Each structure stands twice: as structure tokens, then as C-alpha cells.
Image (cartoon, rainbow, N blue to C red):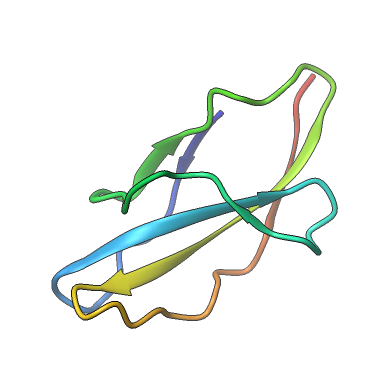
Length: 75
């Protein structure tokens, strides 16, 4: 599942990507900060439904609020 989002207007940020089947109990799915506004989630299952969100994280480790959730169904 290829994901992309709008870049932060702040400089020197990376991103964390979160996933949850219900959009309630979010789990961070990247191991280190994502430098770009693109992420490939290769762990999805056929027939699964997932909600995704992302946060921008500054170099000084300040986090933004999560983006609005995006619901994705895998055929």
C-alpha cells in the first residue's frame, strides 16, 4: 500500500506513520523517521481494512497532531 501526504510547512521535519484497523488504537509502523512524504506499507493483507495517519516530527522531537485518518480497504 503506497501512502503519501502533504509536506509540513516547517523545516527540518521527518514523519511517523500510524496504522490501525479501527482508527482507535494507533500503532507506529515505521522504525525510524520517514524523510519524505511517501511510505510503502508492505505488511497489509488482502481483504484487510486499515486506517492510516501521520505526524510531522521536528529535529528537536516536537510532534504535530495526527493527520485526519484515511481508511483503506484492500481487495
